[in-house]
Image 1 (cartoon, rainbow over the protein chains, first blue to last red):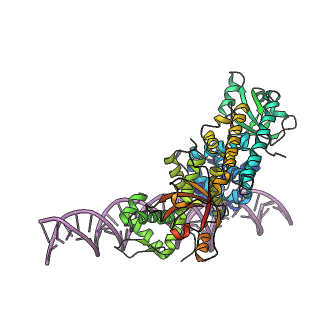
Image 2: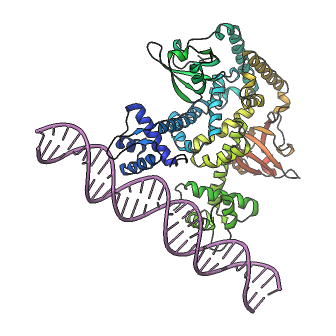
Image 3: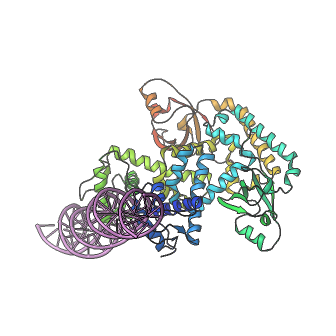
Length: 256
Length: 256
DNA sequence: TGGTAGAGTTTGACGCCTCAAACTTATGAG
DNA sequence: CTCATAAGTTTGAGGCGTCAAACTCTACCA
């Protein structure tokens, strides 16, 4: 009753609970039922099953929270969902609502390795200057920009300009930037993790390693903590962690 | 008992039957059971269900073939599978075997619009000069080519050269190419469908419209018929159809 | 404190898919 | 022609997930 994979249905329940707990601290059967559009009794059923897997803290008639194992697994599922959603929206230029629905349905079937590739691919596309935002938008309009060879030439020239511009400002950009000073939406690449102590180890364990792309999501008023997304995971970084992370800026998402 | 969506399981059966029929003309319960690794009795079960949906020609103890409706639906499912597989292999650089497994598991959940985007995206990436094969390979090696701004500059410059080279030979390439003379693996883009008669209408109905990318899969010894893949569908084109399709060549898949 | 509305649970039924075991049919070798 | 064998089918059971209906519990208000 532990490590076997969950059924698609139980994954849905766990994900729903994860999201509700994130928002309201505890989940109630009714919230879960509404979110998943199932009958209340199905929720009770699922809760028993999740309890058997040691994923939820639950006794009849009580509110639901996640065990530590449940939190890890819930985060994993939410990450899958979001990775697909990101890919659909940012790369395939799919409508947000449809992307969400598609992610819901597909998330249960994505093998781990393929999922990682999806995430890396989105990072790659968003940060490789050769495939700037214009290029992806081009796909959004059915390759309008690249339809004829003439268009392509102009398009690639513009790209080269971008790269050269970036090169000139390169030295300045390479300087470590304080994550806390960046505005949400900004992307940076990790260049170095300073130190060899426990903090820096913990940072590496979170997936923040040289080369990783970090997207700033939220910065608390005092610059601590900073919420970021790395390799598809959401993390909250504290001041002492921020100091150990050296980064370079990347082109922000919007290109105008 | 007709147009409702099939369950994932029934889709698997239909796809298996489609593949077996493609290869051996008829499917036998044993083949289906072996391919799907299920018990023979489960196959009987599924056959009854598929018959209820009017997808298979089947009477107990007899071999199985597909109704015309079954063929259409089977092709649809096979197309979904292959589109995902293509994407995983060609874009995400996933190992072939894993790609196939992932496609198997995910194919039931892909909404139509998202599927079309996957297919268009693969076409786009394979034909837009800005995103040549090198670029995708770059992703395969974890963006090795685009890691530093210097590398990127060289990379984009090479891309520009390609585009310019293509421009010089543009007029020559624009000339209509006989599909029958192309070797398998070649890709072309449709520039025009000649005529307004029944044949040209049928061609358009198959998804062969200006702008569409055609990949040549097989050419019969006498140049007729030619098997191609268009927008994810496999088609077999006859001589009279070939004559109406005007195309321009695109860079072949391999770039060395 | 008692009662009630709303939240949560239990129960039983059903559909879908699977399997194993017992049965039936088709086939072709002798 | 017949009969053994392999292929196919039927049946019954079990897992899983869903629902509706009837039930129980909780919390809050008068």
